[in-house]
Amino acid sequence: MIPSVFIVDDELPARRRLATLLADIAAECPHLLAGEAAHAQAALEQIAALQPDIVLLDVQMPGMDGLALARKLSETAGGGPAIIFVTAFEEHALPAFDVHALDYLLKPVRAARLAQALRRAAEWRRNLRPAVEVPAARQHFSVQERGRILLVPVAEVLYLKAELKYVTLRTQEREYLIEASLVSLENELATSFIRVHRNALVARDAIVGVARGTHAIDGDGETEKVQEVWEVLLRGIDDRLPISRRQWPLIRALVR
Image 1: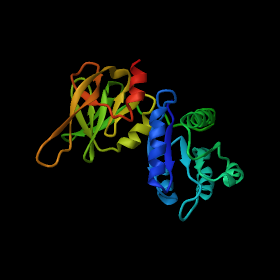
Image 2: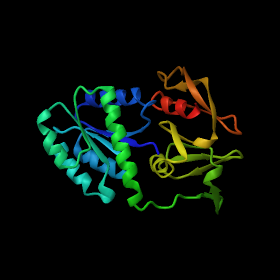
Image 3: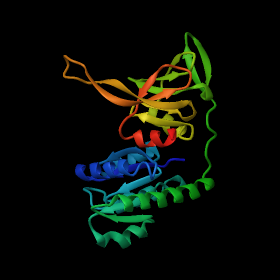
Image 4: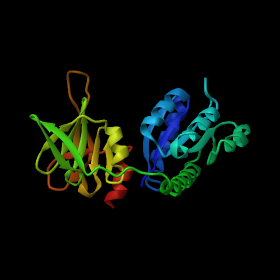
């Protein structure tokens, strides 16, 4: 299972630097970037909702610092996510391991060192999972349509695409609308679906290849801009979904 990663750092350049490094090592160290936060309180809320496997955590932040946040996370069910501290200060190393951090990286972080830490954290999570009770995966989506409830087998779904407050569920035959959070669906269906773009999840076994294509992006309000992107090709339908730069290494590795 590909681990999900969450970044916590009060400095925007530091968060961007980590996101860039994660993208650089995605091919050799597959992962999903679940999100980021600039302070501990926002991190607590988002981590509770997203349930990432690994947290890249700064130590010195306004308000609750990284050490206190790590203690709180360790109190959650299942022991919480794997903690990797990322800081510019060596003196916090011993306190960091007192709160059961798996690794301690000094800024500026090297890509090879980050990949090593992620692999170690992913292995720790894999070893931990058997001791945690995991709910049975759903077999159907329940869809309300014209006064009736339809059960759509998960195995027939090719992709899930977020549009406004709804998610479009696509099978070979047709589309359905469901009210759901794409993030929660991604966490629930991580073994069988993969994110290709910020608003789309695709069934792994529905991907038959990739191709170059064009995709409309926001213009200046008067003209529509078009950019060339990689798109995922799906079994049995002509729909093509754009692949974001962040997810491209994962999709390329899956296709290969």
